[in-house]
Image (cartoon, rainbow, N blue to C red):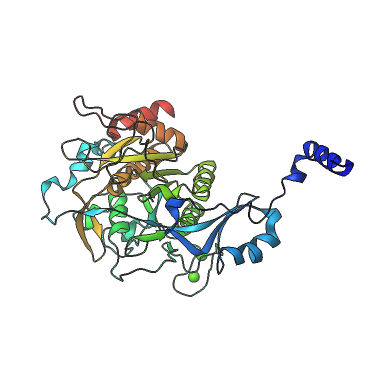
Length: 408
Ligand SMILES: [Ca+2]
Ligand SMILES: [Ca+2]
C-alpha cells in the first residue's frame, strides 16, 4: 500500500461523507421482488433533501437517472418508481331500504352527539379516494367549496397548482378500463357527511364538509404517486381529517408514502385508514398504509350488525386500532341514489365522521387527542372481543366524554 492510499484511507475515516458520495444509483430505491409488475415504468416519486415529495415523468429508469437525477443529485434524497395500487371493496346484494339502514349509527351511539348539538360543524374531511359525485342531492351542500377558485374557466385562480378545483380535484393518471363512475368515493363521502334531509342516507357528521381528492380511477386502480399528490392537496385545502379507504398489499412499503404520512403528522392532520379486506393479520403480513402505525393514524377493522368482527376484515392486535361498522352499509352513490356496500372501506369513514364530531366539540384538540379519545372509549363486548389493539368497536357517546377530560 503506498502513501497515497494510506492517506486517502485516513481521510475517509476522518471525513466519512467524502467517501460515501451520492450517486444516481445510490439514491434510487430498487423495487422489491413483490413490486415488479406493479411498478409504473415511466413515473418516479422523488423525495428531495428539503422534505418535498414530487412525482416526475421519464422514459425509463436509466434515462431518468441520467437526465433528471444526476443534474440535481445534491438536492435529491431518494427516488423510487411509482406503483399501482388497487381498491378492494365489495358491493352487497341489493336490498330494499329498511329500518336497519342506520344500524351503524345506532351501534356507535351517534345520537349522543346530535342531542348535544354536535354535528361536525365545518370540520373539513378529505375523501382521498375515487370519484365523489358532488351533485348528489345528499352530498351537494356537504362539499367544502374552494372559494378562491372560479369554476370551469380553465384558470388556476387561487394559484394552488390545480386548475378549477372549486369542489375538489382529480389526480388520476392511470388509464381505467371503464367510464362508469366508481361508487366507492361517493359511498365513503356519504357515510361521513350525507345530508338526511334529501334522501335515505344519514352521515355520521352531517355538518362536516367533504374535500374530494380523487386518485382512484373508475375501475378501482390508482397509483402511489397520484395518492401522494392527492394527500398533499387535501392538507393544503385545510383538511383536518383524511379518509384513506385503500391500500396495496406488501408492495406499498413505500418510503415516499410513509414520508407523506409523516409530513401530515407534522401538519396536525388525522388520517383514518381502512385495515383491508383479506382476512389477514397485518401485524404478521403488513399492508400499507394500514400498517404504518403513526401517531396521527387510526387503522380500522370492520364489524357487523351483531357486533362481531366480519369474517373478511383484516385484524392485528398491534397495528389495527379499532373496529367500526363495515357490513351492509347504505350510502350515497352516483346517479342521485344509494346502495349497500361492505368493506373496511366503509368502516373507516365511520371513524372519520366520529373524528369530525369530536373535533367540532373541541376545536383546539390535537390529532393525537382525537385519536386517544376514540381509542379509549371503545365498547369491548365479552365473548366477542375484536382482534384489534383496543379490543373494541367505537362509541361516540363515550368518546365525547373522554375527549372532554383530555381537552378541558
Ligand atoms: Ca386552484
Ligand atoms: Ca378556475
